[in-house]
Amino acid sequence: MRAQSAERAGRAGLAAALGIAGTEVRAAAGSLLDLPLGDAPAAPAPVAHPLVAVEKAKLEENSARLRAVERSYVPRFNLESTVYGRGSGAKVDGSLSGGLNGLGLERANWAAGLTVTFPLAEIASLRAAPADCSGERTR
Image (cartoon, rainbow, N blue to C red; front, side, top):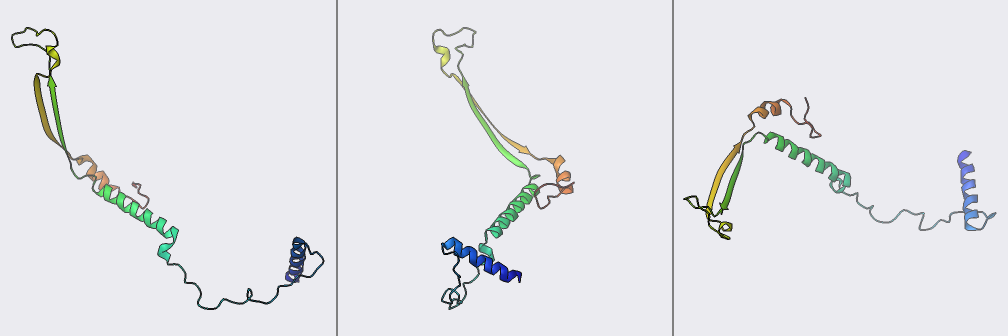
């Protein structure tokens, strides 16, 4: 009874919205009420769904974080170098050259080095606290 009452109220509301209040409104049987011919459209592949792409990106991010933690105790090699020069105008005998003679780079030098950083103290803590799914280390 409620469904029939709701149907009558809906028809009356539709008639009022169409500007033909008091007239009975009925759906005419036609092509809009028939099922479409042919095959139903294929459902999209789950791989193409945006939420699947988001979860896949999260998985790749967590895998990258895990690889970074696993390799964080690997030694790092840094090549460092410098080149510098000075010009004071001072001579070996202690006298000074006059004028603008001290502005030129009369003495040059260079240095090169290799720095190896190996975090020995962190190996035990990294192995004791593996990364969880969110990328945070657990204790």
